[in-house]
Amino acid sequence: MSAPKRRSDSTVDGDRLRQYRLKRVIDGVRAADCAGCVLFDPINIRYATGSRNLAVWTLHNPGRYVFVGADAAVILFEFAGAFHLNEGLDCIDDIRPAVPWFFFLAGPRVEEKARIWADEIARLVRTHGYGTARLALDRCDPPGARRLEALGIQVAEGQPLMERARAIKSPDEIECLRRSLDVADEAVAKVHQNLRAGVTETQLWSLLHQVNIEKGGEWIETRLMSSGDRTNPWYQEASDRPIHDGDLVGLDTDLIGPGGYLADFSRTFLCGDEPASAEQRRLYTLAAEQVAYNVSLLGAGVSFREFSKACWRMPDEFVEQRYMDIVHGVGLCDEFPRVPYREDFTDWGYDGVFEENMVVSVESYIGARGGTEGVKLEQEVLIASAGTELLSHYPLDGRLLEGAN
Image (cartoon, rainbow, N blue to C red):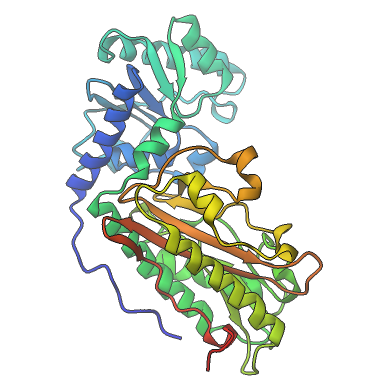
């Protein structure tokens, strides 16, 4: 199976992309009545500035951060020796050495380094905050937060601000998403072409990485590829299990591609040349029906609550092992919003509406408790002014659809 033809022929204006994203952040800071925000999450730093450095490492080691002021000042605190990586990024006004204060680097001097860090941040708040002492933080370990509060800084939650900023995509961002999906299509095609008896799950999964890195992508968020009886229940990571003829093989791309944008769709394939069993076709057809039905419900102005209530009715035998959500946002990673099933809405749901230029992934997992196999399918969708546009074009496995020739 070859990948679909490329869809991303338009150009991306990098300066326009970064300026759009930064304005979304600044508007969010002002709407939250904050002096600014300090961002440690490398995905948020990337969104606000376009700067990338040690992204996976800094997901768990907060070694660099950025201050974005209500007056639009942008000061990046960069990891030592890496200032040169930010050349050409016009939305950064100043670059200063970071003061990391996590234990790996600071050891028993955490409190000392946290004081130095907080003192500098407090000065920025007073300089750039239009008189307010309220500061949004996307993440902050206790020593830093305590010191800021001791200095009279009111700490506010920054992640909601950033998630809402990231939710509405510009045309350049949508083009970046198309490019990542092109890479994911090619990667999944390589997996599909190499699917045969005897190959292991991890050998297949490695092909996703290979193509992604070759094409300028960055990483893959999960290890979700399983086969045969390991497709039920879902969430089993790729293993050294050899795949057999007649097995179902499910995968979730979760691929951070070129420019840092996510390609997130799922496919399930049949290994070998023999026809699918009646049960395999039943599971697969139900999953495809669920995704298509729920995609048809999407549109700008539809509320999360309405969508959850109206979504496809899952047969009782599959409800216990339903996926964690029906739909979630897509951008630089899985993003706001997330809409749970009606069974979970009281515990996990919240109010809101789908908006034009949101990009979302619509999920399905069909597998009964104690069943021999399960099917995972997912489509990435743009909510446009005229309806919805399917962005993930890698074909379904027609041999698994009931009624298909």
